[in-house]
Length: 165
Image 1: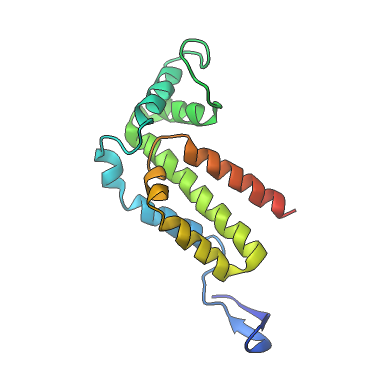
Image 2: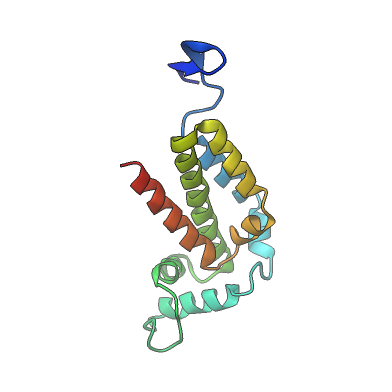
């Protein structure tokens, strides 16, 4: 773990050993823990109410049907196009869609940690991540092939990136 000169509110100025691994480990450990449930990602019938619709849209796009013309879609195309690309490369599978959602969940957790850590310190960042992970709806959304979590992840990542300037 890295040592650095810091000022502690309780101990004053000095060199302290950081009790946490370097940045990015929260991101990796969260992805690892979510990925440990891979069997559930493969075998569950449906996690979210719109999963079938999102999977069908991506499958149609992967077959060459133009989005917004041959079927109804009122959402931005990023998630559908990414999922369609995965379907073209690996074949259509709900598991692939759920893995894509896990990736977006990792982006959301990482962006939340970085944003809060930047403003309030690593303890607050870990607390924010813990609170997010303790939410039942976050866990369900992080494995559902639905648009809510990717939209939140991209929004928070852009706010985080903007705040680092």
